[in-house]
Image (cartoon, rainbow, N blue to C red):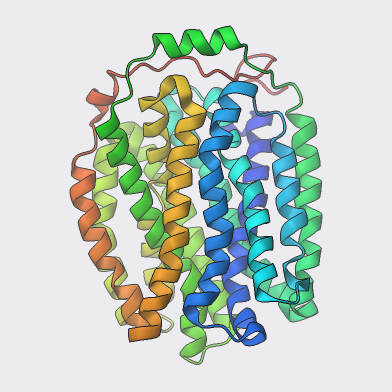
Length: 404
C-alpha cells in the first residue's frame, strides 16, 4: 500500500475516481425529494439512475476504443463535464429535462472510467495488479459512500438547489487531473497495429462469463444502494438514520474491494468470486428480513461481499483482451453500468407491486443464478495462456513506481 501511495499519478487518478463517483452516490438521497416535487412513482424515479448510468454504460466501449487509439490525457475534462452538468440537477423545472441532464452528466462518467482504468493498468506491476486495481476502484467506492452524506448535507442546508455547489469539487479536481496527467502520450498507429497482431484471439465464451458476473454484481449493488434510503423512509426513519446506513453499505464495499484484491493475488480471482457469491445469499436475507438498527451490521456484509469483486472482473477482461485493454475496460464496466441502470427501475416496478422489502429480497434469485455463470470463469492457470502485451498507453516519464 505504501508503494502504491507513493505513485503520484496513481494517487491523482484515485482522487479523480473518488470525485466522479461521488455524484452517483448523491442520486439515491435525491429520490425522496424528486418523488414529491415531480409526483413520481418508485419505478419512474429510477429513470434518473437509468439515464445517468445508462448513458455512462453505453458510451464506455466507445470511449475505450478512443483511449486505445488516441490516449487518455483529457480524463480531467470528462470529470469537469460531469460536475458542470450534475450541478444543474436541482434547477431544472420539469422531469423530462431532469432525465436529459442526467444523460449529459452520465456521458462524462462514461468517458472517465475506461480512460482511468487504462491509465491505472499501465502504472501497476503485474504481480500485484489485483491489489493495485482494487485500491484504485476503492477510491471510487469511497466517493459513492460520501455521496449520500454530501447530498443530505446540501439538501438540509440549501434544498434541492444545493446541487449547484457540487460543481466546485468536480471542476477543481478535473483541472488538477488535467494538469497532472499532461505528460500522457498518444500511442502511435504502428504500435497499436503491432500489439493487435501479436495478441491471441479473444476467447469469446470466457469474456462473456466475465461480463455476465460483472453485470449481475452491478445490479445487486446498485439496487441496494438506490432503494435503501427510500425503504427506510417508508419505515418511518429519518435521513439521520438512512443516510449513514447508505454510507455504511458503500464503505463496507470499499473495505471488501481491497481485501478481495489481496486475496485474489494469493488464491486466484475465480475462487474469491465464487466465495463472495455464496456468502452474499445469507447476507441479503438477513438485511431484508431484519430491518432496523441491525441493518448496519448486515449492510456491512452486503457491501463487503457484493461489490468487492468488480476490479477482479475488470482485470480479467483486460487480460482476455490484452491488446485492446481500453475496449475491454469499456465493455466490462459499461455493461455492468447499464445492467445496474436497468435493474434499478425493474426492482422499482417490483416494489410498486409487492413492496420494497420483497423486491430487495428477490436479489437472492439473481445471485444464485450468477453462481452457475461464475463456475464457468477461467482459472488463473487458464488466464496465463492469454497474452499480456504492454499497454498501449504509458506515462511519458520514468517508471511506474516513481513519483513524477
